[in-house]
Image 1: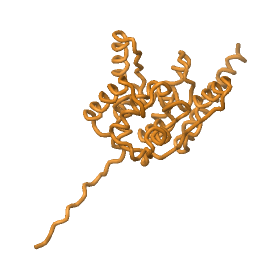
Image 2: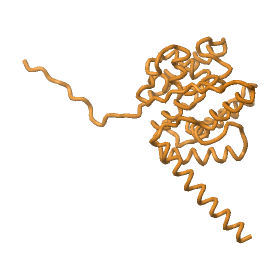
Image 3: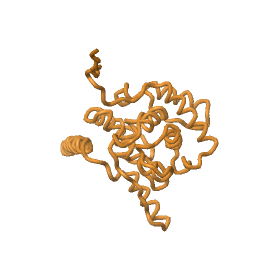
Image 4: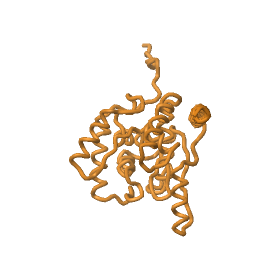
Length: 239
């Protein structure tokens, strides 16, 4: 028992050191591969097809503010206020799921980012526990801007398509920096099931979601990561 207890203690310490280092590493380095990408590739190979990963990393400055606003409106309207978890969103999801057949999750963008970058997609108590752990870490070591940047670069946006830049080029033939409000809302509307829905050919259901997201975009405050501390001086003309 002493040996087993010592083994568990050492394993726990090692896990904490590795996980914290992993999170800090991705605070500065682009995330080019995620567990989901690898899982999708294995599934494609098992089906006898060639795996494909269409992904282009861009900095958040090269992503349209419309896309950031649409993501917040669709997935987590309390993103700038919470510290990783939104109990209000969880309660809303529970009430919605009682009334509707369409299951809605209560995960924040921070939780989704933690899952997408560090974990596997299949639900289990173990994964949810680790998801909460990594959510705390990224909220501690990353900025909100970095969380959003990583989220928009690794999120699944189609069959073999990952990130907003690749999605924007695929569906609208333009860079993510040029996305309009309606185009961003269409992409956001498809995020719950990106391999089923296509922003370039939206179904009536997606068009209804797009309209709802655009209304929400008008209600919530604009997402601003950089705020100027001093107002600009106005020039006075001399007569």
